[in-house]
Length: 276
Image (cartoon, rainbow, N blue to C red; front, top):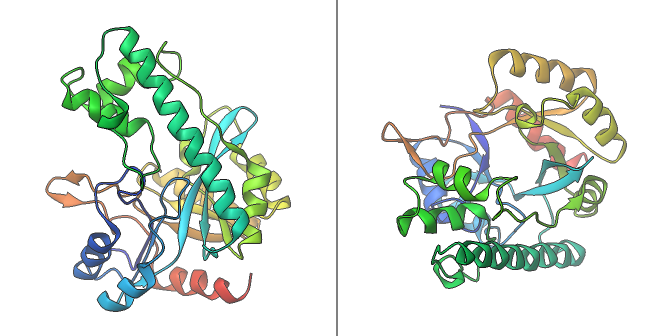
């Protein structure tokens, strides 16, 4: 079990657990530090520090922004963010509205091919809505056997039902995190399109404020971990890691805490809150 897990999703985006449950589980697993990094929303952040104190877990404010880079989607994690920043709230409201519009358009296209699910089947006001919610509705209604099948049959890019969505430019995301006194980290670089050089991304992103790399992630091979670790050292970037836990059970265990960073790296990470 890792000392810290800095990449966890709650029900406010596409996870299955509410923040209090996540923090409670982290405490039981003896994970000392976590961050709930929901997609394009800070709705999970408003009471987490109090809950952290209740369960004796350090909870770092966070989110995961979907950004555009050369017509590709790249995710950037933001830590220690000021959730009361007005520009942040305005930007996330715009993204939330675009996600709602996109979900409605996907459902319209599904309805046209006689797949009868409704927007009301997937929408909760507090949620940053995305394709996983639609996929889950497809499975529940019997149109797919599982989430993977739902995505591949209807929701991946190239399918007629797919609708692209609004994403902020990576430069704007990095500037926004910096404006919120946050620490920006390149999320799961191993999942970025293979035709793009990770080192080139890091060099370019650092110009606009990138401060770290998510070296440890479930999708990363041992070689990738070694490569990203060396890149972090080369460019003087903080090393982070997390399980990307969404609350799904694997062999009767949650991924939470299975991937992350040790105490030494955690202390270095936490020290940056005061040295950004």
